[in-house]
Image 1 (cartoon, rainbow, N blue to C red):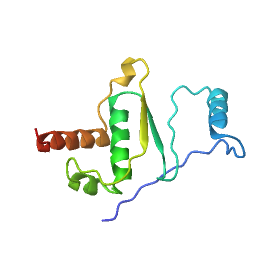
Image 2 (cartoon, rainbow, N blue to C red):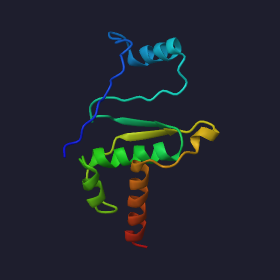
Image 3 (cartoon, one colour):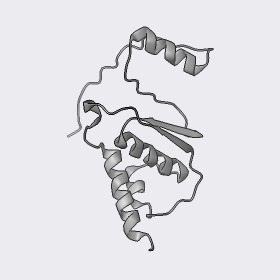
Image 4 (tube, rainbow, N blue to C red):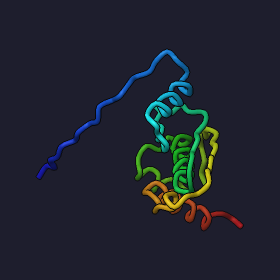
Length: 128
């Protein structure tokens, strides 16, 4: 039986153009009084990945690096990727870790668990 459901999209508050993105983002954050901002960017041609937060988001960033460098586009392709193999050029990464609060100690997400599993396989396969 086909699935059924309903998706309700929220209204977009604004579209800003013709200005540096960093300036526009800071202005919107201030205007809306936001404290925890989630950034999404288009295109896989990034030359820098930035993660802000605890271990899960940083591990997720590492998974994105691995996927971008090796043209991995599905969870199955990530699971099948040989431990220790790196064929492409990874974008550079920066991890920013603010002081930890109680809310920062949540459970790992799916990507975090996958990268942890990949690391364990890599450690077992490493010569040494």
